[in-house]
Amino acid sequence: MLAALTRCHSLGQLLFAVPYNFPGGVRFVILAAGLTPAWQQILVIKGLRIGEVNRAGEAHWCASGKVINAGMTLHQLGGASCTLAVLGGAGGRNIDREFEERGIAHRWLWGSSATRMCTTVLDPVSGTSTELVEDAGPITDSEIHAFKLAYQELVSGARMVVLSGSLPAGAPKTLYRDLMERTSCRVVLDIRGPELVETLSLKPFLVKPNREELGKTVGRDLHSDEDLRAAIVELHRRGAEWIVVSQGKNALWVGGADGIHVYRPPTISAVNPIASGDCLAAGIAWAIEHGMSMAEAIKIGIGAAAQNASTLLPARIDPDTTMRLAAEVVELS
Image (cartoon, rainbow, N blue to C red):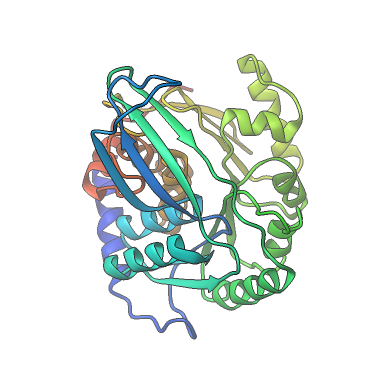
């Protein structure tokens, strides 16, 4: 398996060398698109005390949010990819600057709302991470229309799409369905709830909720493994070809036409789990597009998620470490 994964990574490097014209006449493999990026602050506070003054020993800033994390992961793994998002304000300019510095292909639409700021507080003493999430600002009808037009232009040059993130105020719950109707290639969805339900009749290639998000999508709590199994079967029956359910460091469940499979992630020393699910979705999409089987792609996705959790900044993964961790994933059933 490790040899196969190494060959896959080499293929990705070759694809990245393929020239493309941007933004018109794009030649790339995977498009990552979404509407709720974030400028991320990461604070490291030893012995966090709720309700008291806490001083951070470390502070870091970086581009983040689900669509940004997916695009960053695809770029890090190698291969031609492009990220489409709506930015605004100082946070948006910071994201743009980081993508330019890293040489990541992108198409931004500049909106009237400032890009949100989210904060992660890591406490190495307790081993906990606390996420303070700012909701994205509202989006206007004209901005939604512009996003749809940009998406339609870009998706015509893609062979795989990763659609991810919540919808901002002002966006219809059918927006992801509307985008899928403009898509002829395979779609990976990292969304939840009503937005996900709206897409199922269009038979998405893969959906990736975590266990809590899956419960919200089917409208009930998933207390037992049988509850989880029933929810996966329900989403498959309603149209999703593959359903991947993450549970943090616990076993990952995958459902499809051949039944349900369970995978055990590798053991790591966790530093910051934020964005691991985003890396999982992007890693699976990358591997599938590079000719891997679903079982192999799941392992690559888990490897990317595990490698992300072991680093401080989100989605800044190392391909070689990802492949090594992927080889340590065990299929339990």
